[in-house]
Length: 383
Image (cartoon, rainbow, N blue to C red):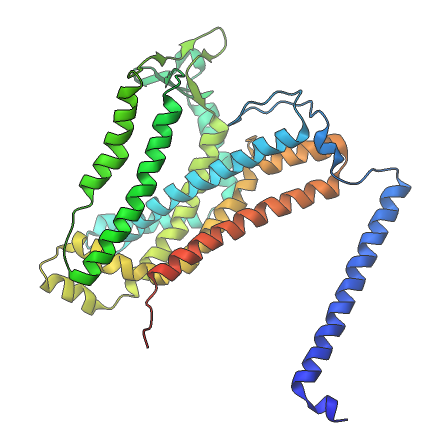
C-alpha cells in the first residue's frame, strides 16, 4: 500500500505504462501498414532511390539529368530548399531589423510607412502573396524579345533575370576557398578583439583585418592564378536567352514572397526587443556623446537581441517550413521533387517520411545555431 503513496514510484509506474502503450500502438500501426501494403502488392523500403528518376528538374545547383537516380533528384530538391532557407532568412532578418527600427523612428513618415507595411503583409496569407508575385513576374514583365536591359548584359523578362557570369577557370575554386578561409579567420580575430576590448577597454579597428582577409587575400590568389577575366554574356536566341546565368521567375517569386512576409513578423519582434530596453540605456548612451544610430548599434540592439532571439528563431523555422509552398508556383524544392517521386513510385510512406526527416533536420540545425548564439550573448551570472 505504501507504494501508491510514494509519488516518485507512482510516477515511474505511470511512465512505464504510457511507454508500453505507446510501443503497442506504434507496433500495431506498423504491423497493419505492412499487412495492407503486402495485400496490395506494394513494395516497401528505400530501394527505389537507386532507380532511374526519369523526370527533369527545371532549376538545379548540381548537375542533374533525367537518367539520374531518385536519390540524386531528391538531393537536388534538398539543396534547393537549403538555398531558399539560407538566402531567405538572411535577407528577411536584415529587412526585419531595418523595418523594426523604422517603426520606432521619430520621423513620422518612416514610422507610418513601416507600420502599414507590417499590418498589410502580416494579414495577407502567404500563399496569396506567392501567387501575386509569381503572376507579377510572369504576366506583367515584358516578353523575352522585349526584355528590359537595366545594366549591360543583364536582361529582365517573363523568363526571369539573365546575367553574365565568369567563365570557368582552375583558379576560381582556390579564390572561393581563400574567401571562405578569410571569413572564418576574421571571425576568430574579431572574437579575440572583442575579448581584449572587454578586458582592457582598448578599441581596435576591425576593418583592416576584414580588408586583408576577405578582400586582399582572394585578390592575391586571383592575381597569382593569372587574373582570368573572361565573361559569358547572355544572348537572345530563338525562344529564350542563351549563355550566362538565369534566375527563374519561380525562384524570384518564392524569395520575394518569403522574405517580405517573414520580415514583417521579424520587424515586430525587433521592435518589441528594442522597447524592452529601458530608457535609461538611451540616456546613458546620449550622455556618452553617442548619436541615435550609434546608440542603436552599440547599446540598444545588442541588449534587445537577448529578448528577440527566441521568437526570431521561430520565424527562421517558419520560413524554412513555409518554403514548402513553393510547389504552388512550380519551384522544385524538396517537397515538389518528393511529390513527383511518390507519384511515380507509389512509395508514399517513404516519401512522406523523407520530407518529415528533412524538415526536422533543418529545424533542429537552425535551432542549434540560434540557441548557441543566444547563449553567447546572454548575460552570464558569476558566483
